[in-house]
Image (cartoon, rainbow, N blue to C red; front, side):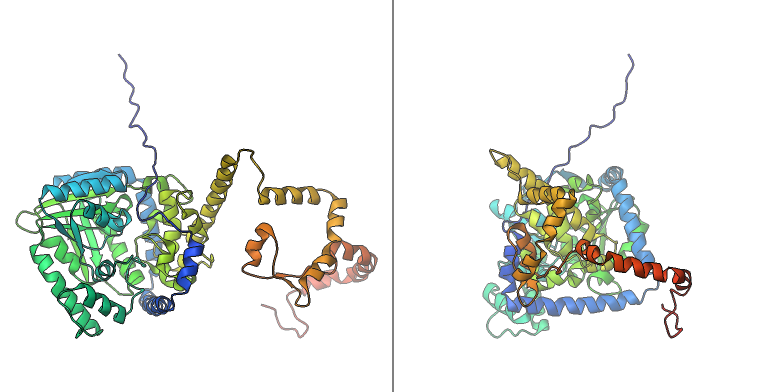
Length: 528
């Protein structure tokens, strides 16, 4: 009997869910946040400070452009070879005593992690900042199982104690100032009283006292990972405080949750990203703490290690050639610190754990633009391009935003037609059909042009149209339309054709000379 190898069956990409689905469209959420003057002042101060530091340390490197190009190329390589790299990574982790779990979505990841924690017989875990665990809403999933998760990253702790949501990837509590943090600590920490001041060192000291016992007594920790090295099975966490190091070394059991896109091929590849990341994120030449571990080391660190590899829509993003570079993101938040929209609205307006420009392209791709109000996120941008300029791996965020806007229009249009018993054309359909009819007939075009004077009357004395009906109102809600000209170019030409032709004939003899002197001004100076 002849046997033919058919290969592995393809897995249909599925969209994700969790804290990446918007309940409220961005425009209405943004309007609410615009009224929070204190938040806007806090974010303005913080982002401008970080942006300035980043510009200084990036300017110190003569090969920054080459580093950025290298980072982008490495990420492209990862996306092209992702299945093979993940299999290699699993083999290396397993060989070093770790256990690898694959999670299709947020529910499966939460079920795996909750089961691991309950198997240890504990009702409290410590946790170090992880966007992946925020994405799957792990804290509430553990609470439902009677397990408390204590955040040990200072900013995450502030958010947790304040019963708040993160508003920034790097600095989740960026929307809070020192006075607000003091009030949260006094209210939520039994170790504090009204004598606590808003001095940063005093706030840090009380946080250390609060967390010290947790570090020393909690036997299970949950972490994220910035990078996973396929070649060696090594996990890497980059941080500024050292609290991550405490989570990674003291507990008996460590559970790490990592998005499948965080892979790098070789250990040497870390060299590129450990230069790009700290400069782009905190404006530091190098990060204060870089923790690396490979499986289990007898007698040193956690003696039981579990790695949860999370998809949750990443395979769906990977399947889109025009949008997949969103998975290149290394979570530096540089795009947020320069974004004029984020600066004015804050992170909560985005309704997702991923705010700012990267969130505007990542969240709708992970979930699908049709999920919840996620179709509004691609419009949360002025398309100024500042995000692309600072991205350390050169993600073309503006182009992806335009791509997703197209997807949203198509999805919305299709849904409206499907929901209508009698499929009715949209305003845009009617507008385009009318334009096609008018522009295909000179007679009809001429008739339309005769209506220009009426537009000037409607514009009034200020010569602007401040309101237009229907879908055109989306334009005039934000800007004015100039009054139309007194006559069309066709009509002007008709009235001036003879005079114009005479001038052309009269000047024809001097055309060659004029062409030769076209770069020279009348005073003989070259025009640059």
